[in-house]
Image 1 (cartoon, helix red, strand yellow):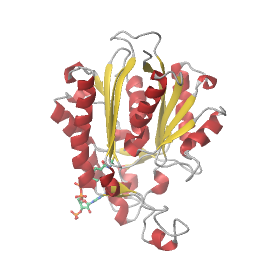
Image 2: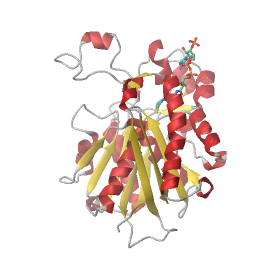
Image 3: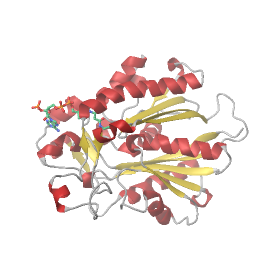
Image 4: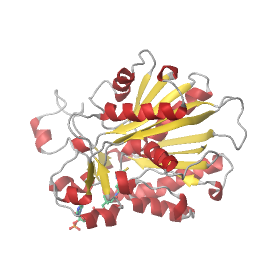
Length: 336
Ligand code: COA
């Protein structure tokens, strides 16, 4: 049976850094509040006309280089984002054009913070069935252009950063041994009854003939709204469940996992997940301090940062889990 593995990883964040003090100069918040409640110290935001496909392109090129795969060898693109360049077509099409690889499929995934793991899951199925051999999975976000900087939006706006991360998923050579690099399994879930707990309402077909109007803009419906407490509670329950699902599926124990690369919504959520599962804190690789929450880009940025920091090495067993808007949640167990 064909199995897949991650062949390489890359990431890109825009150069401009905004500290919590920079944010406090723009809206009614403080470094102390942000740091204590979330662990965030800074985030990267784009400048000028830089958009999501620009970030995705830079991360994809780095992932290709790391995988030693040429762009002509990719046979499918899966792009996860909640902040596409335009309403339609999707990020995948714009990225494909910038990469200069016409003809191959470009699939958009819209599962927010779980988007990268959803994309990884799709790539894994395609490779396992022999449909595609080398799939580019990219998560990219430009949040900074869609945040409510008025007092009404401060609970959400301090949380998000811009960035992109990508991996190349390819087939293992032959049947991998237990200790070889491979994706063991991926697990994806959703519960749409909580869709409005974290969402952007407008523009949309739920409204009048123009999908958006001045009234919607005046009532700030084009900005994200969040029930922070509900998100926190569900994330702290679903992420441990998803990790255990992946371990049980593969007959592995929590102690066998070398590194946990979780989604980064709030440092406190990850600390609670670690506590519930009895994971020593040094095994959880957090990046929220530097990048804040970059939604679909978070996990591949985390992987790339962990490689660069020497924390993620060949042969390590890695577990990832994410939770986000939808609600959606997901996990993956893989050997690097
Ligand atoms: N700066 C300063 N004060 C703020 C603030 C900000 N950016 N945002 C909210 N506050 C204030 C509130 O107005 C409230 O004031 P009050 O007590 O006078 O009414 C107070 O801080 C507490 O607000 P609350 O919403 O109860 O805070 P919280 O403890 O729930 O923390 C979050 C807020 C957003 C940090 C937390 O709910 C969270 O992290 N939730 C999960 C978010 C998440 O994961 N989102 C992404 C999903 S992938």
